[in-house]
Amino acid sequence: MRTSSDFIWKLINSLKSSEKSYFKRNFIPNQDNGEKLYLKLFDAIAAQKKYDEAEILKKFSPSINKKNIAFQKNYLQNQICNAIAEYDSKDSVSHELYNQILLIRILRKKGLIDAANSIWKKAVKKARAAELFPILTMLVTEFEKMILSGSSETQYEELYSIFKGRTITYNEYSELITLRDIYTELLLLKRKAHFDIGDDLLNRLAYLQQKINDLDIKKQSNSFWLRHYYLLSKATIQYLQNDSENSLKILTESLGEWKKNTQYIIKDGEFYIELLYMINYTGVLQGSFDFVINCFNDPANNLIEDATQKANFEAIKYLALNKIYNKRAQYDDVKELVEFMKTKYRQWEPLLNADLNRTINFSLGIASFVLEQFDDALYFVKRGNTYFQDGTREEHNAFAHILLLLITYSMDNVRLFETEYRATYTYFNKRKKKHLFESALVQCLHRSFYLTEKKLKIKEYEKALAIFEENINDPVQQINVSIFNYPNWLKSKVQNISYQKFVTEKVKSEAS
Image (tube, rainbow, N blue to C red):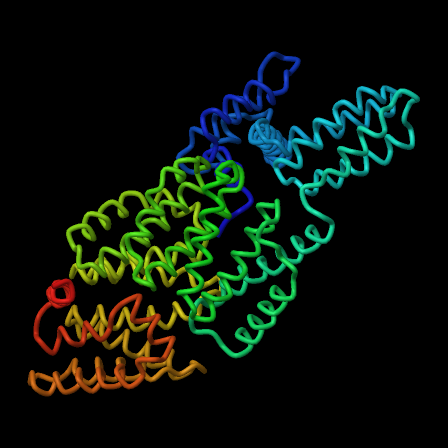
C-alpha cells in the first residue's frame, strides 16, 4: 500500500539525471544563511535505498523536526513537481502556444495591438498544423477581443482570412468530439472484457456502432485525429464483436495514417502504442504473424522515447512475439525471450497498468509451462492473479484458474493439485457464466489425476476432446484456445508425448 510519507522518495527516485539537474539549477531557493536546506534534503532522500523519515529528522535537526517535516516535504515536493512539469513542457508545442496566448493578452491590454496580431497569426498556423483544437478555441477568443480593441492600422481582412482557414469544419469538430467520447467509452469497456462478453455489453457495442455509422465521416478529412478516432473506434468494436478479420483491416489502414504522420508518435505515443496492442491481438488471431512482427520491428517505433511509453511498447512487443513463437513451435526463441523478460520485466512493472502486468505474467506463465519449467509457471500465474484487485478482465480470472490446475497437474503434486482443484471448483460453481469446455477440462483433470491405468486416463482426455470438438464454434472457447491450445495439450497426453513435441510435429506436418 502506498503511504503519503514515502511518496516524495518515490518521486525523487523516478527523476532522470537531466530532470534532477534542471530542478537544482532552477528551483532551489536561495536562503539567507547560505545553506541550501532543500538541496540537502533532496540529496539525502535521493541517497536512501528505502525511505527512512527518522533518519531524515536526525540528520536535519533542529531545522527539520516532527512538527514541520510535513510542511518541508510538501514544499520540496511542490518545487520538484513544478520543475518537472516545466522541464517536460519546454519543448512542447502546446506549452509554447499557451505562453503565446498569454503574451497576446498582455500586449492587447497594453494597447500594443499590432504586436499581438503578429503573434496571433503565427500561433494560429502552428496550432492548426498540430491539430491543437483546445488551443485554437482560445485563439478564436483572442481574435474576437482583438477586433473589439483593434487599432486603425489593424489589417482585419488578413486576420479574418487566416481566421476562416480552418483545418476542419465546425461539423467535423463536433464529430471529432463525439468520436473521442465513444473511443474513451470503448477503452473502458475493453477493460472489462475482451472476449467473454455479456448481452449488456454486446447491446452497448451495437449502440455505439450505430452511433458511429450515423456520423457523416469523410475519409478525405484534413484532420488526422478525426480519422484516427473513427478508425480505432470501428476496429475496437469489431474486435470485441469477435470480428478480428475486419478489425485488422481497419487497424492496418490506421497504421498507414500514423506512418504518414510520424510527428504524432513523438507527441502522442500512447495512442500509437494502443494501435499496436490491437494489432497484436487481431493479427495473431488472424495468423498474420509476419505482419505483426514487421509492425513491432518498424523503424518508426524508435520515435517512442518516453520511459513509460517505451516500457509499454516493449511489453506489448514481448506478448506478440511470445504468442507467435509458441504458435510456430520456435521453442528456442521462446526460451530466449523468457530469459530476456525475466531480466527486464521488473524494471517495466511500475510503468505498466494492472491489465498489462497481469497479461505479461500469464504470458510468462504459459511460456514456462510449455518449456516444462513448472515452478516458474506456477510463480508467474500466481503473481498475475495479484492484479485482479482492479476488478477488470474477469475472463482472465477464469483462464488463470484452469492454467494453475494444468500446471499443478503436470507437477504431479497431490497437495498442490488438490488445493488448486478446490479453488477452481468453487470459482466455477459460483460463476454465473458457464462454458462447457471449462467444465469438461476441469472434470477431466480431476478424474484422470488419480487414475493409474493409462487406458483409463486416455479415455478421460478423449471425453474432454469431444466436448471441445462439439463446441468448436463457441467464440469464448476459440479465444481461450488461441491463448493456450487445450485440445493440443490433451492430444499430447493421449499420444504420451510432451506438448512441445506434439506442437512441433503438428507445425511441421502443416508446413509440408
